[in-house]
Length: 368
Image (cartoon, rainbow, N blue to C red):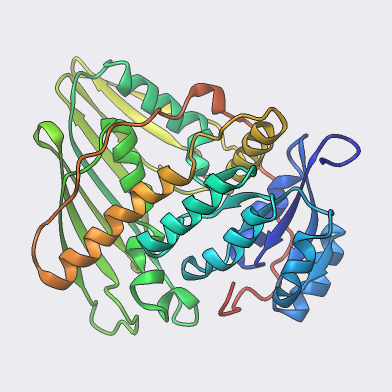
């Protein structure tokens, strides 16, 4: 049951940078969600974060106790990708709702195991595609799907950042590398804009000279969609921050930058060109994590199925696994055709003010 004032009670599983810098501050911007617990293996976080937010702290070993405590309705899982199943499946089995950071998992088998657990449970599962509640993103998707720019034919994107060698993402191979960590952003975006699923994958990977990452640190991907529509994107852990995409349609185009990020000063903006005229569309900075949390809590409270569900997460991971096979073999990889899914709706849009973020507490934990 929700809290006495009708709010969904969340436990935060893992206190890394995304939890501290985005999710935990964002919950306070909502009117239907509250945090009551923290799960962490770091004693400093257990003390300091619990004190800042007034939470009860649990160790990972105490996780089953938390699930049975009656103190929470939902968990937000933000562990490294390859640890998702061990916290998601027990929660679903216990009837606890799950908001799961993307990618859904690091293998298709893990995704299918999570999907099976969700189908057995009365609990809801949502994969944290925060852009599915962001106003600028939803506006672009709606305009393209209405045909304002003609038929979408070509998508290109670049998304890069520099990852510290001490970060767990640099030390756990492909499962924590740029394809699974960053790839879902351009991949999910083109799937929404094309309203279709890729049927062929090609990829090239590079190890930048001097890089100490234990997997490809820069990867370029080419995708073929039905009706010979093409997409191309590059993700990297070894290049300065940049994020952008271009969608070329038969009657116009969209260019967006910033388009995947969040936080202070990051307003999702785009330039739309029609009939040779370009118009800038700038949306306000919103708290994307507050938005997705408010939306998920609303789905729980109103017993509605969240749109970015487990199948949405699996569809991106199955492409990521094909990318890995293409990188290892040097051969193009075919994918079984899939029917289109219901798109994100403008009814999911949330415009909540950006939260103030407290100073970070030890974000270098290898499991968070």
